[in-house]
Length: 123
Image 1 (cartoon, one colour):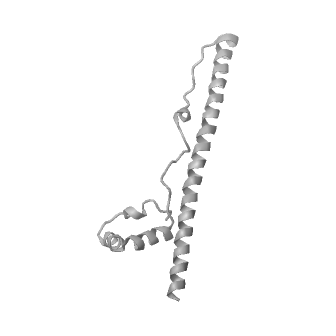
Image 2 (cartoon, helix red, strand yellow; image 1 turned 60 degrees about the horizontal axis):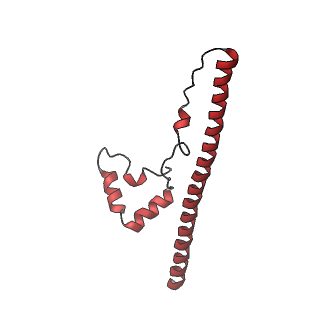
Image 3 (cartoon, helix red, strand yellow; image 1 turned 60 degrees about the vertical axis):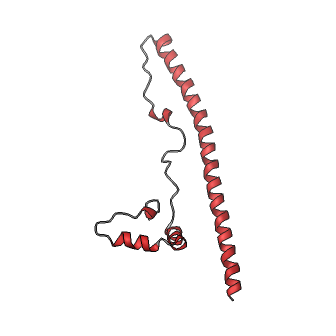
């Protein structure tokens, strides 16, 4: 029974590692595709702004002011925060790393804020 438990635990940890790897690689691929699409969209916007300027100056004879477009300075998806952890991942990390005493001591202090390990959790 203990050997079976060890085998299943090993399989679980291996599967969890694969899932984490897939999540990270998927997130990176998403970011790369986003950046390519963003650059293409910015190029089209620049062309539209140039056409707008030409219409204003040459056709309408009125001065043209370039609009303030703050999003043109952005690179990558908005809200690029660190990956959030769910409660089970946080609890597992606390138990695996042996930091449960640190966590409990932190929460017991009067006026304590959110423990560092929970700052990136979904809860």
